[in-house]
Amino acid sequence: MATAELHGQKITPFEQGYAAFLRGVSLEHNPFENSPYSKQKWVDGWNKAQREAWRKT
Image (cartoon, rainbow, N blue to C red; front, side, top):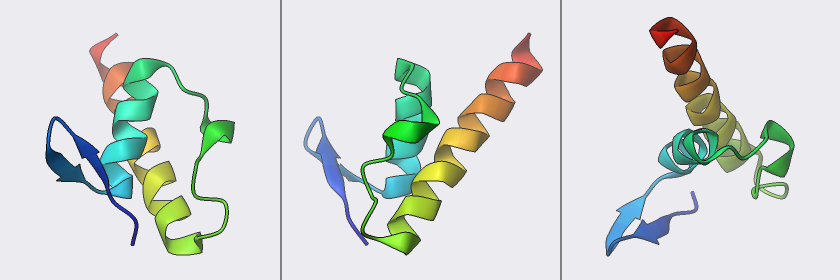
């Protein structure tokens, strides 16, 4: 599973997807095209952020 760093802390693909939605990144810009597991986790995070944003409106 791929990880990235944000402010010196490692974040998972799920967290990256969640943050991507908050930044306005579209679902089509998933950076994990070659890793099915990480790709799905990124989508899961993106979708969770979208659902939470929808509930707040």
